Image 1 (cartoon, one colour):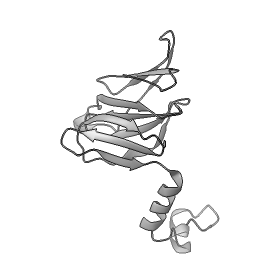
Image 2 (cartoon, helix red, strand yellow):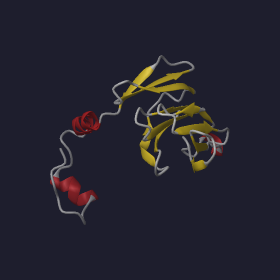
Image 3 (tube, helix red, strand yellow):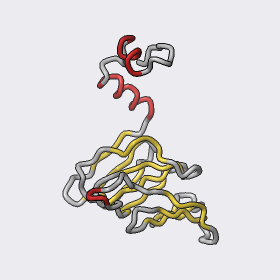
Image 4 (cartoon, helix red, strand yellow):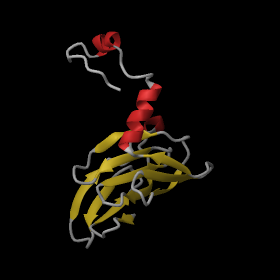
Length: 152
């Protein structure tokens, strides 16, 4: 369980991969999230092992026992992006950095790691990995119904 920094929310995770969001006074259940569920291994859902709200309470990071970390939008209960990469180790602790642009993760057998959440940095990183974005030919192959535009 974890409270948001401003006390507006309480998030409680369960063994079946769900996260319940309550108001900070514990009077009203605000929603149930799918947590870190990615289908799980061997057909099981991941148990929630750690939770952390962003500094502004708009995001909730959810860690699972198979090493999955999923970001959730607090207001809509929807996943934000795909699961963050981990070595598959049990996620024991999550914490947002004081700048709000990093998520720190600790596991059972892995040294604490840091994930960059700054969108500008992530776009630059994706463009570097994609070697400058989609070419016109690749765009035509994968996005034929959408007019071409430079991506990076």
